[in-house]
Image (cartoon, rainbow, N blue to C red; front, side, top):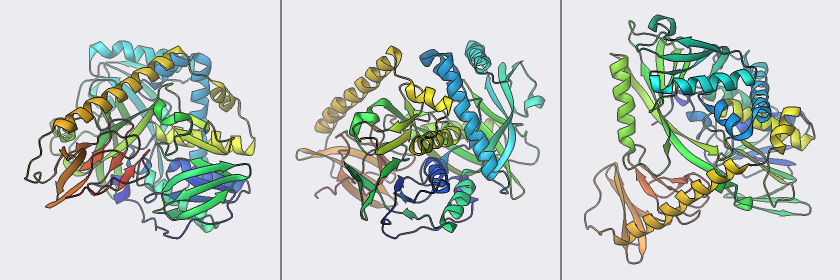
Length: 502
């Protein structure tokens, strides 16, 4: 399982050295947010170092669908409903600023950015009202979208009938790993260290700065920036305001006679579908994304992947799967990205998260907000977003999200307590949580190797569940993910699952 972007980008070397000493700013996370904010701060003359738990682009940025667009499904209408027109316009201005930054920095670099129209569509008459709500929100934010009724298949280059759609010209699709490779090259050429395989585990704040604790030792800095998607520190309970989800993405080689989509498409149907097409090395590659599913709460994730495959092959006969992957996203209960000071850190730790599946625009927009706060550069749109306070609608969503978390915590512990213990190992690519003694044990078999680890997530004690498509242990509470041998793949957990006693 490897994304198309990682397969077709130049190799980005790892750096297994220890965290550097004497940095003013430490950035945790080498995705787009982390490398963008490191670039901005370095250019302002600050001493910056980046630490990355895995490899550059290993998590969300390297697994995105790579759309840099102001037209974002139903995001605009949801923000408008929760926060009103003023905050909606500030959000759109932040995304415009992100687009301008990416174009300015990366448009001259071959193979990174390509202009495409963005299309939000529905194939169902029941979802036309959702299209109209998004149109109204886009107009309120001065986005020049075009409303289309029953456009022809030839106009869109898709092999199915569209009932209604919105189109916005002049948007962009990215090759996200080539983008990361270029930012990494520039930073390292300027002497900015980007250390990989170095996981942040904790941070202590005092009157003089931050002691950043990692799996390769401690480092002091004045300010820590968490650009990690999930927030690995529990101060302020920011993780409790985020709803994690995963989405599958599959890339297909198209036959010569197949319809070629003329733009970047996202449906408002259930299940949602994301579509883009690229010319990579002379091959026409169709990339399809599935709708989001709650991390750790789907019994058979492989069924979702099969559904996407079936839809692709019925719509584009002869399409041949090249590769598939999955990405994790976080939606804030406010429906707005968080980019600011982590509570109870005296202003010394900042975080950026909650991009709601639009990480290409929101990663850079959040980097601009974080860098602006550190450098005391204030944009009106950033000030508006920073000053927005959660309303009652957000409070209700937070209560609902955490009630769901609590329900899973209790129910999964009960199931683990009564699960029968079998003497036989799980079949290949299967996993289960059973009780051995008083402890839930997660046992799985992958490639003929059976492993047994603790079934209790090291973040807040949730019982992990088996993701049969990706062969991982996923926590249904806050989205932490682990390999079959217990290694942390994604936070907020920072400690691995312990090995179970035989």
